[in-house]
Each structure stands twice: as C-alpha cells, then as structure tokens.
Image (cartoon, rainbow, N blue to C red; front, side, top):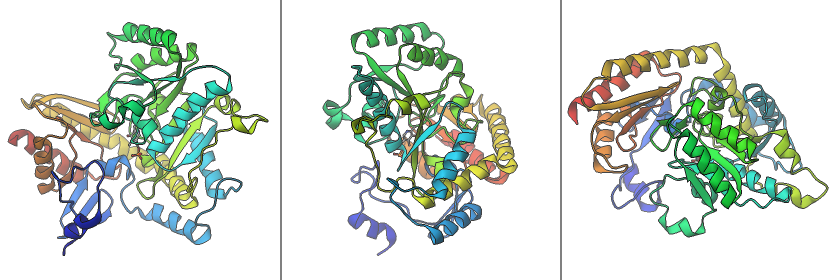
Length: 421
Ligand SMILES: *Cc1c(COP(=O)(O)O)cnc(C)c1O
C-alpha cells in the first residue's frame, strides 16, 4: 500500500470533508522554499506552510539550535520552574514587540494564544468587579478553531453546530474610511446595551478571510475608542507577526498599541508548534493579588517547551539579520513589479499588498471551497507551485528565503492561471 492509501485508513485531516477529498498528497522532504514529493518533483511552498516556515524549511541554523537544546533540556513543567531559553526568548521578544508589551504567557498554538487573550480581557474586568461579558470582533475575522476562538471568528460558514454555545460577540465591519463614523457609533451603542470586555482584531490583514487588507489610519480611531471605553484591545498577530507586513509586527504600523498580543505560526519558524500571549503591565497587575483566585489559572502542558523556545530565539535572530531584512525588501519589490505587470489583465479584478503578503482577486465567480479553487490548486501543483486559493483570492506569502528564480516560478504559474481559467 502506498502512503496515500495507508493515510486513508486511520487519519482524519484538518479542514477536510473526506468524502469529497479523500486523497492526501505525500510530501517526503522540504528545504528552503521547496517541498518534495515521492517522485522527487519539487514545489515552491508559496504560502510557507500556512505562514510558518518564513525562514525556509529545515533551516540548518535553526535545526542546530533546536538540536543543541534537545541534548541539554527537553521538557520541564513551567509552573514553578524556569529555564534559560524561556527567559532569553522573553528578552528577545521585548526588543521587537511594541514597547507597551511587558509580560508574556506561553501556550501551544494560535488558537490557544487567542483563547488566553480572550480570557485576559474577560477576567481583567471580572477582577476589577466590572460586569462586562461581551466581546467585539470584525466580521470575517479569524482567530482559531477552539470554542472561544471560534466564537470571535466571524468567518466560518461551518460554525452552525456550535453557535448556541458561543461567547456573546458583537461584530463590526472593517473600517474603509467611509464607514468610520458609523463603526464608532456602533461600538458606542453596543457598549451601552451590553458592556464590552474586549476587542479582538487581526491588524491590517485578515488572513483566513482571503488576505483582506485595511488601512492603519482607519483602525486607529477604533482602537482609540476602545481605550476611551476601557475595552481591552487584543491584536491577533498569529498570521501578521514576524516581518510579514514589512515591519516586525503589523501593530508597528499603528500608533495606538494593543493591550494584548497573540503570537504563533512564524514564531517558531515552522519547526515546532508554540503560541505566546503578551500583555501590558496594567493587564498583568489586574491579576496580581493576594487572592489566588484573581490569578490567570490557565496552563498548557508543553508551555514554554525549551526546544520550542530555542527555535523561536533562532528565528528572531534570523528575522533581525541583514540578509532576511534585505530579502523582505526584495520580495516586496518583486510583488510590486508583478502587480503592475498583471494589473490590467481581464481576469484580474484587483491586487493588493502589505509587506511580503500579496493577494490577487480573480475576476471569476468562485465559492470559498468550490471546485474551481481545487482546479487552480491542481494546476499550480503541476507547475511546481503550492498555492492555496481562498475563494477567488490567490495569495502569495512565500518564505523570506525564496530565490528570485523560485519567485518567478510562482508568478509564471499565476500568469498561466490567468490565461487558462
Ligand atoms: C492560524 C490563525 C489562528 C489559529 O492558529 P492555530 O495555530 O491554527 O490554532 C489564529 N489567528 C489567526 C489570525 C490565524 O491566522
């Protein structure tokens, strides 16, 4: 039996309706921006394996650090113990995070990072004796698939079976400059009717919604309004973090800094899973008390796993390196060139870009998980490019180490898609 057949016997894949899509494709190895299948054919990983492997797959630099750590200390309970990689990582993060972030809580992935952000916002008010039970979020936001994270995600059309169990969440549209006043008014009205504990948002780019982008200047008044009303702002930077928007974090582009930030995905460079939720001193202080019950009683078994911490430290060092910073600039430039080249193509509705994130809206009718999406995916794979269109949106978020030739392979595949579909 081949791998696909063996896989089918016992494995239940994420985001997959197995009756419609029974076959999973084996990948046997990866290096840099390339994935290799069983026949040795290679594919440019143009979405960095869900925005994680930004410094390239199987980076020698990162693996060496992880390996060294493995030989020294593998795993230790983080309740009552500490270790060098966790402390060093906290110090490294403080250098690149917005200045107001002072404390961090380790967890396991993007969903747990946002769950903790949500719990911080809710318990913050509870600890202060305030009755605030409602959260605010954007329509079409995505914050993860665990129950709390799912509640605040406006996106999923498949939330049906769970909706009656959700946290109370009110939604606002993305601000576009024209609706700014209305959005602010909605926040005030909602807050009067059911006091808001927190506002969770993906700053500047909504990943899962199809790399939807919006302006910092339009987000700014919303964050200011939240501050004014004592609503805890939670920036979900799980996707946007670590260089993708052209700065370390998307929040760097916005003057009003969040109270809480959620990190994962590229945090550990695609090597191992980890999440981190950071917050201001003020949030932390609301939990600091003689009363044990005012603490944030939340733990994940693998919190601050030393190997994950060592990996994250190595990743941040690469991110800060001149080479990666230069690559980020180069890729931004290549995207701009590509955008101006294909902008007038009849199949292109719009293109947009923020940092190294590039998205193109096809001028065709498409369902989010419709057939055409799979056809385009298959077509690109034949061209040696792994892309994962979201509805009519084709987006590129390739590793920072993708070479010019490899980027050209991605653009060529998209040009062909435009001429074929
Ligand atoms: C991927 C993602 C999550 C969830 O992360 P997981 O590690 O898949 O649980 C949360 N928020 C955003 C913005 C994401 O892109």
